[in-house]
Image (cartoon, rainbow, N blue to C red; front, top):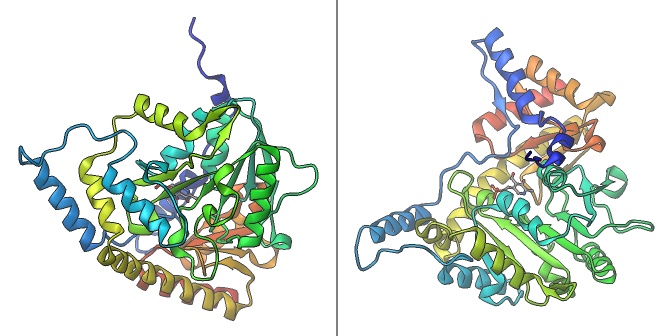
Length: 393
Ligand code: PLP
């Protein structure tokens, strides 16, 4: 008889956003006249940039003409987009060959699929609070997880420490949910640690476009990273592609383990397990990296940053301790008066109709903290900030 992947039985119920949705639904049923100020889910609210829309339309038109039509696309990505992304890294001083860049359907897909490259016996190190998919993808793969908690003491930026033992290291900087971002010296410590033990860093750069300070946008800005890191990135938050789907992954050709080259392994994986990404989407994605596209996406990012500024000003005035907001679209606050995450969630929902995300949903050490997303509507964010300040001061 068939045996399913029994590791699925080890997954905890994924209740975070489901539970939030249930609670908000129940509230609205009981209070149908109330408007909710939604600062919870990390989904964008602004539409795609005009340059992207124009390129998507051109892509559709190409598909309608016999001499411009594209059938199957190369599995690892269209050469024009791989080259464009390599040049984007080049502007930051990171030299990549275009065949070190793989076009993907988004970071979530890659974070799961890339695990195919690694044996189940490898231990995964996940710094918490963390994006929940890191934990779940490794549980599904039957891998042991080392949970490394972080907190105010290390500013939510844990560093390698004595006795730490792992093979796959997840780093997300700027971080979801805490908004904390590593500096060069801190990232160099992880790169040195990974190289010394033959580990591999999976660096999630989904929020790199939100960095304002002089901090690394890519792990490959750190010397030594080419022999120990894979970078996963996405246009979801950078350019509003959450519902359009496009991302990219960088695997340097210098990355080898156990006598195998991980770039070549990924080529083999992609050519077997995908038939490429839609031509139309790749045309849209390439437009993100043009001068016009970059200007337009940064106009949108500025609107989200203004949301962050408004929320941070309210928390400052209320004397609440928080992290993030500056280099990331998330603000991570300490719940007031020692309240628990869900207790604070209920208070905000019932008393001021503001919806956020309880920190406990990102790992046990997130208890007592709360995440606000800054991707919401600006008018709603301003009203939420006003209500928050009245409640907390
Ligand atoms: N990585 C992090 C840290 C995220 O926060 C998210 C989405 O919220 C993703 C990856 C997923 O991105 P994508 O939409 O490209 O799948």
